[in-house]
Image (cartoon, rainbow over all chains, first blue to last red; front, side, top):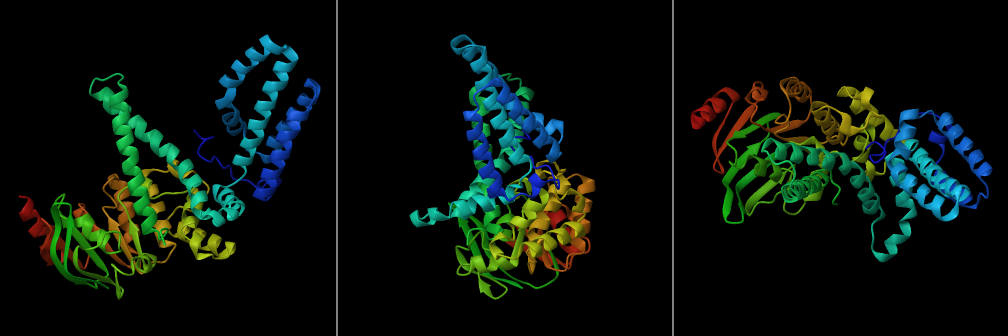
Length: 201
Length: 224
């Protein structure tokens, strides 16, 4: 959950202080670099660099693990497929690329406040004004999506508990209907709260 | 100052408010009544979130029907459920978010956010994820996000309904020291003890408008 909810870890490392735009540009360059690395040894070197970057950022092992954990099952399946189709060296290369790219993207998340990410996104989306889109609203959409994840997860837990309390172990309909109704009610309330904060001017 | 002149609100077939007239100038005003009596609709009229079907609502000299956006910049609103008001992932970011459209220098935003969090006991939580706060802390965060805009009037719609006794008291203590005019819709009668004036709503009408003891007595009579 933390990986999805903007798990900014406060700190004062050079990664925390680096401008968000620069961080995203370096991330893009590094991910491209990972694709171009030709050997397992080069990939091992890249892995050492990523570990060092996490150490410099001082975000903690738990936060680092939370970034890559969600993709591990996918990576494991991919490793098996690559092993069968292309051999052990290719399997290690392909899966390492994915894990390292996710870890680097996670590091950007861990060292960047959502508000800084929104401001950068807003600047990057300025050209969208020409086609009638408001960059502020687009970046707000990103923030609301992140913020809504724990709220909807809590709602899903409440719906499941209510089901169990009434003796229903599993029913898709009994789960989905109150969840969707609850999510729509939350959206209504959130819209009203945004209006009250003067964000519909 | 809030003025209502023969306000009626109809939602579909149902008339939620039936001819409410009042001038609200006191510093602390409570609104009580049974569920469905029209309290929340009345509160929403005060900053233009709801509009009267007939009659007029004037807030700080502005008609809510024509100048709702202007009014919302001067009238803060605190809802029952803090989760529906918190927009950003961390505490300080959510408070700062309220100031975004004011285009203030980053340093001033930082100072104002730090000051309001300090005043309401959340300074130590500035970088914490908002969803990990307790219910009471979330409501205080929602309050900070409203107060950082320095509204002249604060409307609160059942701010303690979802809170336990300790957190209700905490919110009540913070409410007591606010310099603004505050209008509170509530079922928590203890919150109103030192208020200046309490309105009792029943079926869309103001049936009592008096100091707390008298108004609460009338309300208890209605509920008996």
